Length: 269
Image 1 (cartoon, rainbow, N blue to C red):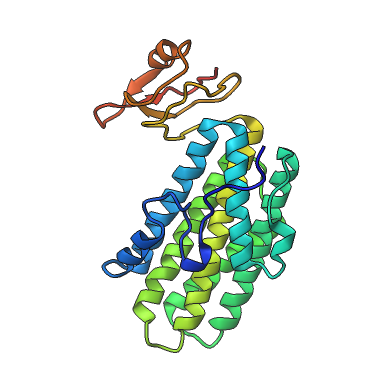
Image 2 (cartoon, rainbow, N blue to C red; image 1 turned 135 degrees about the horizontal axis):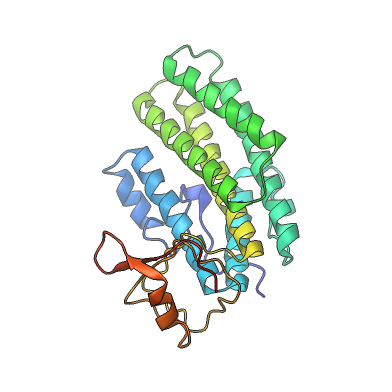
């Protein structure tokens, strides 16, 4: 199993997706010229989630390799001692623990940054942001349940926070709070990406592919034995193992989008 992904994300450039994402690299820089920071970050976070999910659809080993690459670059961009997190161990249980430690550490940094940077601020925006970061820090420092459903909820909370921070930053360009906000939403993006990594690793441990988008993927060599497939999205361009194509078709219904199918709840191979 490879120790790192060959296509890391570039957190220093503000990309929270893999290098293969349509939102990364030059694409993100072009987006900045015509959209708000919040829109750019929202696109990047969606692309990141899609890439991690697709990696796990291809296989457990590939998924851990991708997660290692993301973790390495996340640590390099945000943590004071990145060598401690250059890659996750191959053991999935231990990797889950490492991912949660990364989440807690980044959340603590975010909490400190927002409370220090926004202390003089009296606007409602700043007050709401302090409250949100305090809530996130308190919950994460106490406990994060080690199951994908709980982590999905925290991912949503983190994504909403970072987009709110970006919106405030866009309105604050040229003011004395802009630098504090830039640091805060950079850290918040790191927290959200780390939560996604933790979710992906817990999914790997549980062999859970619920709600993953596999449209257009060649999955003919994938091993789905024992995997939970509730809510998996697929299309006619998805290639399944030969002994599984008819079965997955019988277990699915077409969505509101013509040609896109979803696997019914309760489906396990």
